[in-house]
Image (cartoon, rainbow, N blue to C red):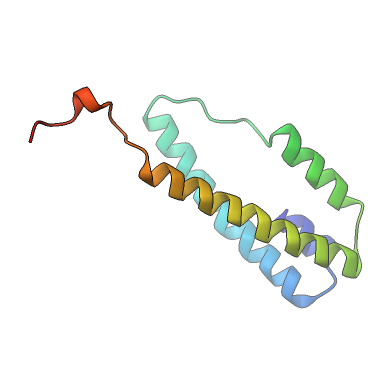
Length: 102
């Protein structure tokens, strides 16, 4: 989406945010892939069907319409991520029977 913002965005703010998004997410994704590999986990090979559909829809847009849709998408996506992180932070990582005795 960051690359798409750089290509299809009209405002300099959207294009600049797209550059930052691409850079930051590429670095974070690489760290996540390395961590998953270190744990012997399989990682996704690409975007989900929903993510691809959102990208394809927005790829057909440009100008102010793109800017508005992109901003709305980015805010909603990050709000969803924050909610998932909060939920995960409250979850127990070990089953109760594996926690140390007090």
